[in-house]
Amino acid sequence: MAHVARIRFLGTAAAVPTTSRGLPCVCIEREGGLLVFDVGEGAQAAFARAGLGWNRETAIFVSHLHGDHCLGLPGLIQTMSMQGRSRPLAIYGPGGTAEFVTANLRMLRFSPPFELAVRDVWEGTIHHTKDYAVSACRADHTIPALSYLFREADRPGRFHPERARALGVPEGPLWKELQRGREVQGVTGTVRPGDVLGSGRPGVSVGYSGDTRPTAGLERFFAGCDHLIFDSTFAEEHSGRAGATGHSTAAGAAALARNAGVGHLILTHFSARYADDAAPLAEARRIHHTVTAAADQMSIEV
Amino acid sequence: MAHVARIRFLGTAAAVPTTSRGLPCVCIEREGGLLVFDVGEGAQAAFARAGLGWNRETAIFVSHLHGDHCLGLPGLIQTMSMQGRSRPLAIYGPGGTAEFVTANLRMLRFSPPFELAVRDVWEGTIHHTKDYAVSACRADHTIPALSYLFREADRPGRFHPERARALGVPEGPLWKELQRGREVQGVTGTVRPGDVLGSGRPGVSVGYSGDTRPTAGLERFFAGCDHLIFDSTFAEEHSGRAGATGHSTAAGAAALARNAGVGHLILTHFSARYADDAAPLAEARRIHHTVTAAADQMSIEV
Image (cartoon, rainbow over all chains, first blue to last red):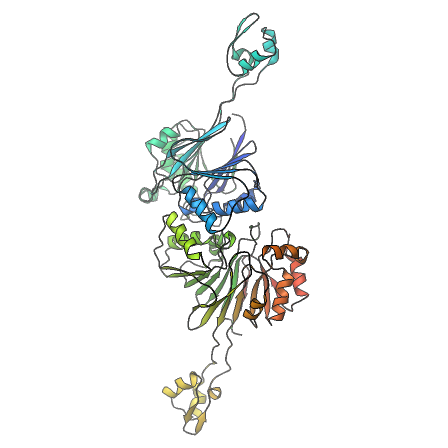
């Protein structure tokens, strides 16, 4: 797996910030660009601490409109503006997200100097470039909520010109065809892409659950994903409370990750009632092979 | 001056938070109650760090509806709710404050379990108890903005029963009269309150400017106040910028404090462009006798 991206945790608390955890915000940094999942209050300060910069190509994905997941948006937009942002900013979230952002900017008499596109979305592929796509799936929380999946396109292997020449394919349009994965006719017969390309690099996939119960739908949605960042609000001793409040336990997240064939499970959104993440982490590790507990300003190369 | 109150600075930055300064929020703690001036993003985290508690008798005063002065309100209300607040909460601010709070609670589908009264106010006495009053005066910023003045009632001196008895005033209704500051007729003649009461304790006054240019109106409003917390966004080298953006320089704040006969001037709302507060502090001290630069989590007994 190529190291083309980095996951950076800016806030890993549930509902209420603690002295060591801020409200939810997770970034994927990728070739200069940023994908941001949830923007809790204080995210702009965590952005500054992480030195992420204010003018990167950025798309923001809001899981749901509970305050701890979105109240950092207006301040982030304002600070981006004051720090001279000029690039457009895209924001996606479930129904009500556009109203939340535009109503606040109106009430605060603030108009960003860059292009701001806020779109209410639901399930499906909601954002893509030639290199990756982000899709959404309904989560199971107390209000409409989305989980997101970032998936890079597989990258073809490196092209070896010397091999193409040796097989009688002259430089020119035929090389492009081979690089695109198509067979061509060389001077000495059929040449397959595999004859001239190194082994391909599979794209990385990263899932983000937001606040949710574990569900069969999310198990399918996150099937086989490399890194899954999942709601781990409660330890098993409070599993009843997890059910009542539309959250997952660490063990519930681990069972979903195991069943979905997830590689690396990353627990986040820890309730402030736990002094540390030891109990949820131990419970999850009994069920899934690879589990990490997220911490503020933690960074993982993927 | 009796030590009955404490000013606590929770956020002392202008516009954009820095690693050492959060967005504007200042509290006066007084006999268990809290008066809060501005609630920038991150105020709830600063509240928790200061250990202020979530269920104190509290009134909040918003200077104006720029995001850095009010975006912490919805999160503070939510966290107070989640931490079990039961007492009513009063919020005051210029026109639009009630809409800002209620629209956000509606969009975030949040209804606090305590009584919340948000009132748009303008000049005059806007909040009072038997012990103190808070009044508002128009400030001079780029949008409608208020400055606030907290003023304790003067407290009578302590009553000395032995003196009253010695002067021939028996315990009963006449003691109450003396305690209320009225003369009474004792067995041996007229007794004055000063004969039986210790020296009075003058009430403390604390002013909070919010974002503003120094004005003649504010000089009158803050006349003689004991402690004045004033906009000090800029040092003299950027005085043009202060004028253009509706802010004060440290020297401008000091000139107002001197002209108004203020006791102690406290500079706050420092632009992130200055590495420290040395320049504005030095400039202000050349003009006014007693000047402090506020810092996050600084606390002053008054």
